Image 1 (spheres, rainbow, N blue to C red):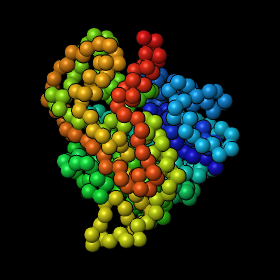
Image 2: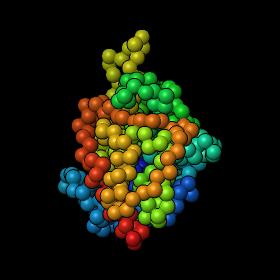
Image 3: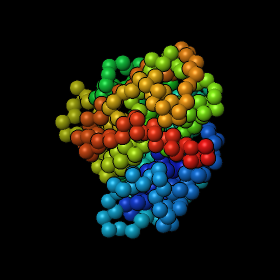
Length: 359
């Protein structure tokens, strides 16, 4: 029996696969290697996963993460890769029908808040139709647990900080956020109809080595080293709950190991938006320490040994001024505790960036 990891060539997916393999789980990976950003980076991530599965040593960017893995006496897991688009219904049906899948970590999606304003259709194809193929596969094969990626973007217009999962999240400001909220509602329907344990994790600004080139840290690093100005939106008044990749991975796997259960005290007359009377849960997964964007840039400048020329701009459409995760429910359910603060996380990212691009 294996764990299916979708989006396995992605930033989070590749790290989750490494962690699972390190503790002895077999992993079936799915990715379509689309060109939303440089596919060569995705291929490089997969090479790391394959090398590790075949007995290679953990590299400098994952040695700390994997040092905490408890393999419980098992050998390293096996890995197989399938290049499939999640929206390809027939291909996904075949995959579920021909593989023994115990549980699912669904991380595959069309990412990017701003991109959803200019190219909306891939968000429906991947994030809605693609999620439906996962739910149907889980339904027909009886998986033990489905953990899927949601996002802090579901909070949208909510401004009460910190964001709490018991607060209704029905006011998204982007199509991306709307598709992820749709995932949460679809998951509830399947948990109700077919008793599938499902857990949604609302990610808060994940960063670190092997990250996404469309994210601020990657963009800022590239431009500062090239001597180009960086675009700083909302005139630098953003705050973000930056969460290091190692903390995210530990939280994802801890959630996977803790199948959602029905809340026996759930009351339809006074509903709790974080739980249900069926095996469905949502949790925030963040660092629980918002950092001002200007401070983030200062830390990056210190690590790069270079000053950034700041191009101060107004807020972008679909964006929010601040994010701040209340992670109490994830802590209570799994013992999750973020460990890496932003100074160390940025240092590790810069070290990786210089190695990867030979700078």
